[in-house]
Length: 168
Image 1 (tube, rainbow, N blue to C red):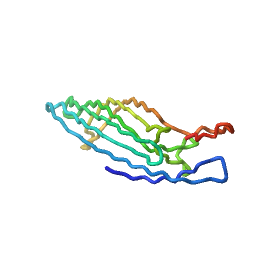
Image 2: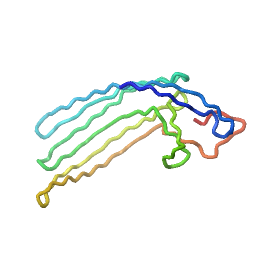
Image 3: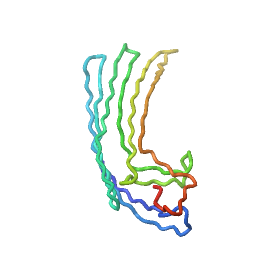
Image 4: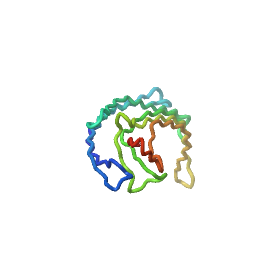
């Protein structure tokens, strides 16, 4: 998977004389996955994503290996337990001055000052299939823990006349 991004970024959100500059970025991803069946009751999906990201205007070059594993255990024909782990990196930040997505949100690439978002998720789930009135229903219950680092947002009402460094 290869992607090319073109960003038109404003240099100052506080000034009416806004300058626009362009950033170009490249992203590549290589995926792999293997399904392993150990017994009739135990199987696993083991995979990975190797990604790289490069922003031309800045020295923002990143490479990551993100593993993925899912283990499924069938208790019986209608009940299964699943345990999984997924690691991810996201290179495009959505910068918002509100808590909700809005049309004026800014998409900004990771660079040397704005690190990629890093996420790790572990989950444990139970799935049960049951029949009722000649129909089948599936009930799933999942518990998960997600840890995210380098999540960005604008600082509201931020302005320092002596330090006009970019907030982003």
